[in-house]
Amino acid sequence: MTSELLSGNESVARGAWEAGARVGVGYPGTPSTQALEVFARMDDVYAEWAPNEKVALEVAAGVSMGGARSLVTMKHVGVNVAADPLLTLAYTGVGGGLVVFVADDPGMHSSQNEQDSRNWGPFARIPVLEPSDSAEALAFTRAAFELSERFDTPVLVRATTRISHSKGVVELDGERVVPESGDYVKDACKWVMMPAMARARRLAVDARVAALSSFAEECVFNRAELRDPSVGIVTSGVCYEYVREALPDASVFKVGLSFPLPAEALARFADSVERLAVVEEAEEYLLGGLLRLGLAVDRIDLPGTGELSPALIARALGAEAAPVRDRVEGLPPRPPLMCPGCPHRGAYHALRKAKAIVTGDIGCYTLGALAPLASMDSCVCMGAGVGMAHGMRLAGVGDDRPVVAVIGDSTFAHSGLPALANLAYNGSDATVCILDNRITAMTGHQENPVSGCTLQGRPTVEMDLEGVCRAMGVKRVRTLDPHAIDDAIAAVREEVAAKELSVIIFRAPCALLIREKEQPYAVDEDTCTACGVCISIGCPAISRLEDGRARIDITLCVGCADCVKVCRFSAIDLTGPACDIGGV
Ligand SMILES: Cc1ncc(C[n+]2csc(CCOP(=O)(O)OP(=O)(O)O)c2C)c(N)n1
Image (tube, rainbow, N blue to C red; front, side, top):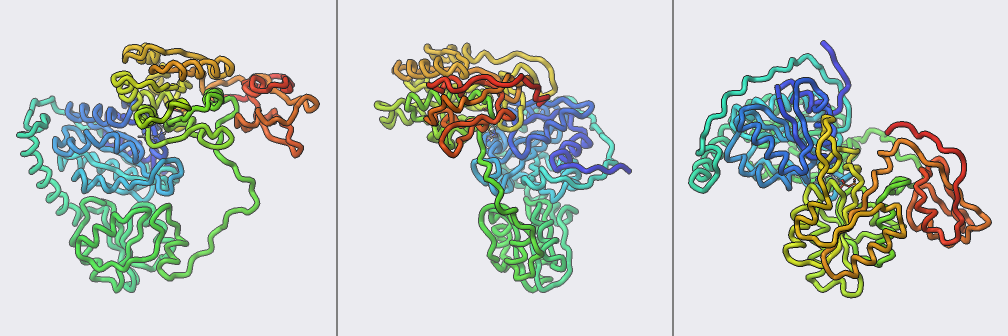
């Protein structure tokens, strides 16, 4: 028997592979991304990045209708995007097994909100499996495909950051078994969801939930662990591990199938303990479920947002908390910043010069909201900035200061396309800047429709962004290199003055795609006037000395020369030899 240390994401990939999934499709999003990247490298599978989660799920739905098994991956907010097909696929059911892996982010380490994907279970009426460690991530994912076919339903496997990113020992003795995929059989009553058929399928959904509820009672993924009867804790996911660490003697009901909940097994557990409590992160999903079952739950004082820890749980239940290692004091803060050489910096400098109100979006360029650039005014969800620029103009904003949307290339392909179509269709006069760095940088360099390469490394077409914008009816479309800072400033000024919809495509590769580091720059201390302009572009390689003059750290400088171009006193010049920073 071989065992390996695997992360939860790697285990999900392995579970899908063992279950014979032939296709994996998803859209990147921390903490889920690695699951599909790992799956894509496995033997005998096909995997692709879709431009967004809705398309990913629809591709998988086609695979399923065609009789084969497929894995879909996304982060929690991705399910919002995929919700339209998901809620109706709950009606159609599946052909080949269809498993959606979703990773939530309690504490919002890398997300704009903290929603709990377990709620899709009762909302869509589909089963939700919730692993507590890597070994379960493998086993639950593999089992999810069987459940999907047995109950004719998509199945959600829900992880959180700690499950996705922590490693645990996993036995790798499972073989890959690819089920025979049957021929596609035309069946309009199952696959064509128009009202007459949907009404009938709606009843099938209820029958399925009833069958799943009976199954939940004997499902081995739900487990009552009876120890000290004075307290019984109902928990799931990573919180199970925390509870075991904080209160090793407590009785625990470990929920593995989070929807539907096993009503009778939970009632028996409640009867066997004196005090019933629930431990879960950032949501009251289990608590709500238990209260709806009529169980008397003792509400304990845990934070309603963010991640839990064994210490927090011990304290809330009046137990002795094991000593925890505190943060190391005195470390310098490390605010998130765009990398040295990042092409987004030039675009923001130009926008700031134009005093633009910037409706923003999600990607590395969201960091433009932070000091010293402080040049982005909103960030809601992927694609939102383009529509919001139009809305700001409708509200009458922008007569004295221009309204400009910024959006990255991956985000433009994800959900910027329909938003820009709206601006063209409805005659908006906003300016949209597409920050095209050729890659989905924020989530770790995933390929996307502009990159010219697929997830499995095949060369492919690059989306013609200029052509797409023109085809939508945008007449003013121009492309420039954001490192040409004076041109960028001039272009932004001209386009915002045009009083007509315009698109500026700022195109330069992500600094981390460039393997060769250019010769670094240095500040001439005698010429520097301490004006602070180079500091204001927010390059991590530039810092301010005590007397206000600037200093460049040559180990960080990649020689992009953005600072040289903004310095009005010619105080920055080349220094030292070019050096190789190695691969990225
Ligand atoms: C619906 C949704 N899916 C996925 C994500 C995760 N995510 C955040 S930004 C981003 C894309 C960033 O790429 P791009 O727009 O090219 O900008 P870059 O980071 O390269 O500057 C992704 C996938 C998200 N926040 N929301």
